[in-house]
Image (cartoon, rainbow, N blue to C red; front, side):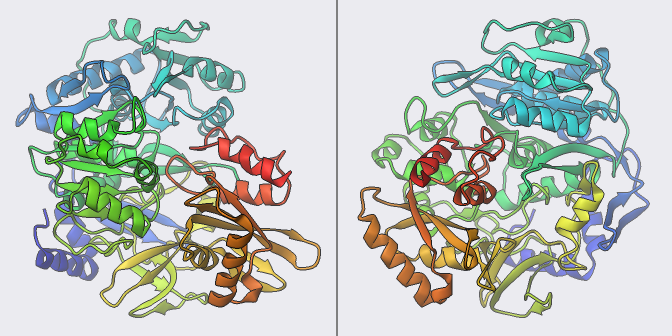
Length: 626
């Protein structure tokens, strides 16, 4: 583990000068069935990327088996249920190993085999993590679909990957609501032809319809034992598919491999969070997202950590639930999204102060750049100015954290993700694709592969090439802009692939949003283009303000003046809508595709909006437009 700033600088230098030697040393800390013949083979033009070529392993032996000799009775998963009166579960490494192996045998008994795609549509219960690991145990490729997604979204993902099995539940608890997951799954399966078996976990005891392919989890698990040798996997065999939103609306099934993903997620978890053996780590994400894959399941378990799974929401039964759980389980590491921080920021700090948060050592932020106000609130009221905040930048496509501070080791800077991890060669490019040296602002790109980069888009390698490697040949292009200060710290400034041509002028929406956000009353904004008879396109700004009762005419005038002053009159939005929220994915990304359609009046062609964190704001915007 990196323990000091000088060690960090040494590691970063070594990783640039000899990346293969650097990653060799880290990979050798893991349990391999047979060694690799070549550390790295890549060609960004194809693109083809392979790490630890020829190496054989099974990721579950590194997450489970190797800990049995040293800490069999340590809590691996600490499960906090939705209902605070329901008892928490402490699942030891020995018990988790047993339950994963038994579940793996259950999958095999129901026809699953190496290479099959298994869709998992389950609530945040331990069996979700167990199912993920059981798939990995037998070499099946898991595709987890967030349990808040609709039947349409679920069916699209099942069909895209040709999944042969679905793991689901009778239902799930989410705050005061009970979600009928089996009903949604039944609806989805009406348009899926590849699923041959459906195994249903009993969580809510809700009465459900029963189909010929359905089996109860608790009945099937009793038919098998817990002895399941790990399938031998090639380092480059797919471990999982995880779908992320595409700019065209069609989700992209990002494929992550067994070896490189394991090495990088474990390395980043240990170093970013500075995890120690007795710590209790809680990432509040759902396993339906990459954050849950990498930093609830695989990264923590590969390090022998205690990882918390939370079934509920931060507002149930009250807005102090996060802090109540932190105090109850003496959480040391708390990793959440700026969206959640901003939501909790609106409530009295007395809800925090009533709980003892003295166990906290490290705070984290993930999903989107954190604004200054939220950062300082988080630091002051949750961390009491005693906890470093790791503001992590990464994506579903990257598999693990790329730019961040290391907790208490490297300097933090509010609103800056700060420095790239060792092994991440982040650069800034101008519009011509030339690298910008030193301090500056431009397009963020990565010029050398890292072990956990996604290898392809399932079934569409050409799209993978076009989206990530064609705009700036020789670089991975994440679609974000950034600025870099004199010390080399990066601040993510927003998407750069959102460019609107207004009267022949190419206008990036991110700088306009930055100008709007300078207004003292503005919390957040999103700018999109819409068709205009004269200009070709005009700009529409959706703006969240601190006080919804504000004089809208006045704030619209002031926003236009600020944009004209900061960027120029051409960038002034034609329309400004003051809204209570912006449509976002569960990971905090603004769904600009939906905003563009709303601005264009095409609100009958939005597609499935049930996957959003807050679908109700779409109706609010519709009403304003009408």
